[in-house]
Structures are given as C-alpha cells and as structure tokens.
Image 1 (cartoon, rainbow, N blue to C red):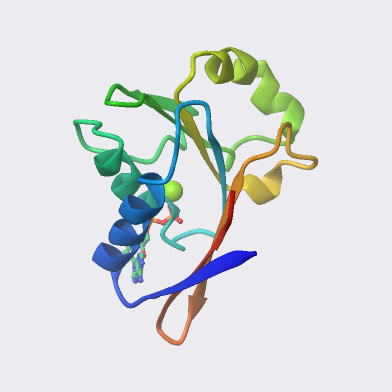
Image 2 (cartoon, rainbow, N blue to C red; image 1 turned 180 degrees about the vertical axis):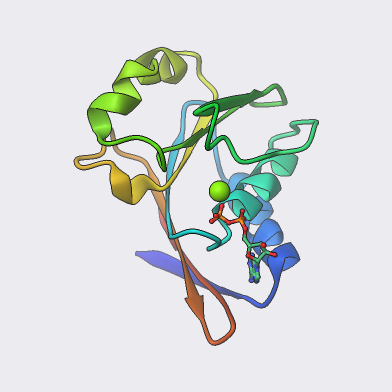
Length: 137
Ligand SMILES: Nc1ncnc2c1ncn2[C@@H]1O[C@H](COP(=O)(O)OP(=O)(O)O)[C@@H](O)[C@H]1O
Ligand SMILES: [Mg+2]
C-alpha cells in the first residue's frame, strides 16, 4: 500500500515531508529513493520541522550523517558517496539505530540489500513537478 502525492514546488515537497513525519515514532527508519535534485533533502527538511528539530537541514553528502536534536532526534544520512550497504555499517549505522531517533537515508537505491526494514519514500520527476510515493507502515 502506498500513498501518492504530487508536488508542484519545493515547499510542497517540504510540506509532504512534514505531514509524513508526523506519523513517525522514535526508532523508525525512512529509506528515501530518488536521483540528484529529486527533492530528497527538501523532504527531510519538512520531516525535521515535524520532529521539532531546530537548525537548517543541509545535505549530508560530504559528512555522511547529520544529527538534529528535537522532540525526536533525526539522523540524516546520504548514501550518494557510499558504495554499498557495508559502507553504511562502517559509518556506525547500528549505533545510530540503537539511539532511538528517526533515521532518514537519502539515495537508498545505492544500498542493496537494505540493512533493515523501514518506510519507503520514492521521489521522481513528473509533469514538471515531483511524484512522491510513500509506503504505509
Ligand atoms: N516539486 C519540487 N520538489 C522539490 N524540489 C524541487 C521541486 N521542483 C523543483 N525543485 C528543485 O529541485 C531541487 C531539489 O533539491 P534537493 O532537495 O537537494 O534534492 P536531492 O536531495 O534529492 O538531491 C531544488 O533545487 C529545488 O528547488
Ligand atoms: Mg540530498
């Protein structure tokens, strides 16, 4: 079962991330699929707002993981520069999981197989905007 949203601009993608994150609990994992410029980071920016996280959300492409304290801590990963699932484990994935925040991972398509289950968010360009598919719990 998935929910499909059509986003016409970046703020609608942020709003979709906000609405989605309101359904999350501590310990949830979110795998975000989509190519360069799809809007993955925009979606996570909305998620951060809903989780009560302060501070600007920027792409963790270079630092691999960003941590945002909030009502629920958000751990934000980007697999763009990872070669495989093993690389995610090498940067301490299991330790982050155990800390009971929400873990959101961009470029999830680079990780085969995914190291654990989670919600799936897929963002694709469509009709000049973005089609966002969200898997149910
Ligand atoms: N509907 C949309 N949703 C999200 N981003 C959009 C949309 N339309 C255009 N954009 C642009 O696409 C880019 C998305 O950037 P970003 O969120 O960093 O993508 P990603 O993290 O997937 O690489 C931004 O420059 C944004 O302005
Ligand atoms: Mg990004």
